[in-house]
Length: 292
Image 1: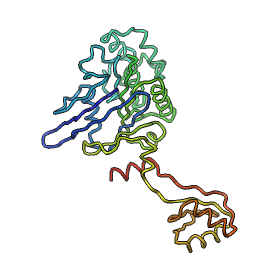
Image 2: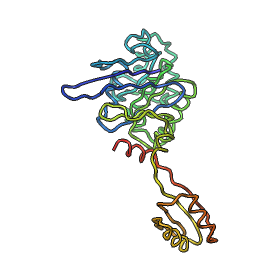
Image 3: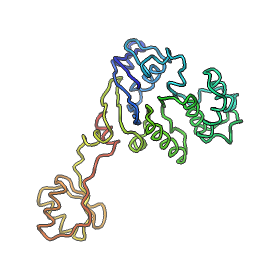
Image 4: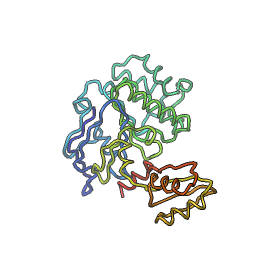
């Protein structure tokens, strides 16, 4: 697990992280969300020992990351895809990491293939696109076959195939029982990838919840209705106090009445319905409501 307890970090008079506490558990993908400047990257850097906290403690598998003798076997991290020696090939970059951590050289070829880089293993990393650099960074994070993965904006620069690949990879790793923490600003991607969310703002924890529970907290109150009797239904619902709009032929969007109430009113008047769908909030709407 990753455990953060009362973590603090100041830069001058600015408090980037403010008594932050949370636990990231295995077996699920945890999304780490927050506006720009919320303290996400600073928190991740403190978890893997690149920044020292002013107070509090962050542990990976029960110990500070810097205290592990075999850190790459404990947790793999991608914080900056461009943080590689530009003159080294992808293979040489990973081989250097493997040798400094006592990992078998054969592991390099395995993660290059897993990341879809086997065909460019001999190319210099300095000539890689952002998407290829992201793949190389993820390969490095996987090198030690760690129980914990920490990834900061892993889909930046990836094409649609790459986005699908990383989405599938993260879910597969979580299904194996690993701990997966992913920072992202793409709400649409988190909605289909994450099981659990940690949301921070101004260095403080706003939510520690499942995706479903967060969305369910936001009441949209809109119902989409399709009917061949749309005109009559519109007048009926308006008479019951609802606000009704018509975005297209035969379609109504209704605010102020629940789906059961709309169905009952239509049935009592003999009006046919082809669709009656309460609209759920999107993750983006729930996130915006929370951070607002």
